[in-house]
Image (cartoon, rainbow, N blue to C red; front, side):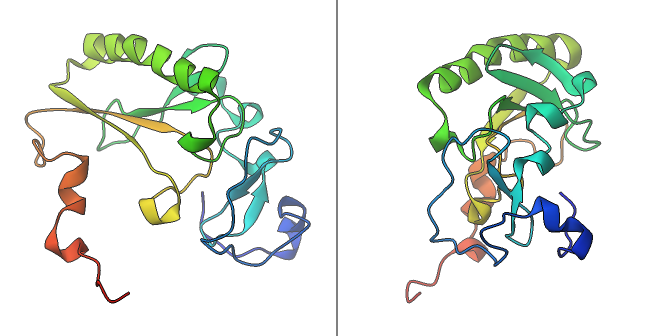
Length: 177
């Protein structure tokens, strides 16, 4: 989502109850109907789901590679992470913790089909799978999605998994905070 501050013309996209920046302590939005569910932009404002790029009404059908009644697999064409994509529920859910048990099962129902497709098309040497839940964890689009990233032995960072960056001394928290 493009980082910018709200302008007068954007007012219809913002939640009518609050335009203030969200506190990380505010309770998460739970399983609201898609047309009412808020989304967060980079500055922390709550946008209406009409602006959510992963809500079904906003998805370009040409980007959907696999689907089932509850979820879709979308590939984005990233020039560095070749073949990577995401599984997202059709209904607006903010994080994996907001998925129904049926949506959770539907997400994992797609995985073998996606792996077979990527194995056939790209023949990767491995995969990283991951969820980012909340802005502190790196979530930028506040519609739940599971990242699927094919990995290749000839990558400069081959052998370094998701936790590699988090375990660096530079990421150590100050215990006094």
